View 1 (tube, rainbow, N blue to C red):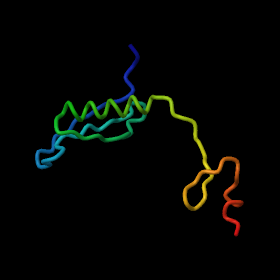
View 2 (cartoon, rainbow, N blue to C red):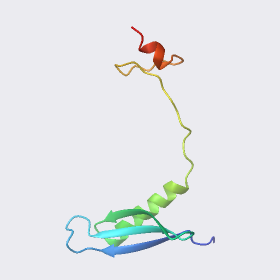
View 3 (cartoon, rainbow, N blue to C red):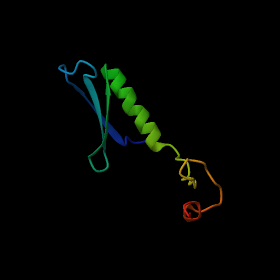
Length: 86
């Protein structure tokens, strides 16, 4: 088992009728606030925070770029400058 990386702190705000629980995620390395997720129960808020942590640790897709004209049609291999010429 690896060392913990995050701290999840759950807050209850009974005056919020929709999402009364907040799960605040802190990075232990520098004690910085990473993200806050909400839920109608404490368990729901914690699960949302865990889902964020899994996504944060996951592999990201490579950046992709597309050139398109004003109507949104994608033209592979053409530059934006060429598409905007009269």
